[in-house]
Amino acid sequence: MSLFQHAIVRRPCPQLAEGLTSVDLGKPDIQIALQQHRLYIAALQICGLEVDILPEDFRFPDSVFVEDVALCTSRCAIITNPGAPSRNGERNLISSTLEKYFNDIEMIDFPGTLEAGDVMMAGEHFYIGVTGRTNEAGAKELVKLLYKYDFSASLVPLTSFLHLKTGVSYLENNNLLVYGELEDHPAFQKYNRFVVPKEEAYAANSVWVNGKVLMPHGFPKTIQAVKEMGYPVIELELSEFQKVDGGASCLSLRF
Ligand code: CIR
Image (tube, rainbow, N blue to C red):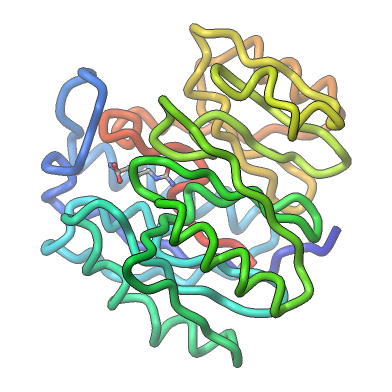
């Protein structure tokens, strides 16, 4: 596996409380969110990444979830076409930043929609969730682009998750966290899987960064399982992002 050198994040904006959500955990507090975000950046830096911090954008309440607007691979970057109407304009904010790091930049376009929270990289293979945000046309456009860069890809149709990575995280070395509708999915049987218990569902979205795993604080069984897989864990308070359906991976692009 290759190590990441860079991350891109975007500061949360005061309108974060107007972000899309499917849970009833109250409204995020922007001051606490900013502090949690600073510690998230520090965790990426501890993992050796140089972090490019983009300014908040008050026009887009969900723009802190920068993972959804681009897929960054070792060979190219692909700007997505978010399926949530309130988030679609976020795709226009990222290209100048990506141009600093990538010679090859591709785009997903209508009728295809795609959010990169639906894309999970496992070595040279990419799993693409088909969800309310990523339609089949968008997923197929992405497959074509990935093949162009000598990667492989496959589609994972989903029924209940917001995004694919809501319920599955690849932690390298054949290790996987998996939850809910993906527990018995044939595509993931070949991995060494830890099935995340229902009460810890939020921890199914954890993120491997250069040998360490960034995980939300407060999910002891899953954290213990990841430690037993051999990874140092960095626990992060992400409560304010959880209130608007955001998890550990959503807050950065890593490459
Ligand atoms: C949304 O619904 O789009 C945001 N409130 C949360 C996005 C989370 N992103 C991710 O899982 N990659």
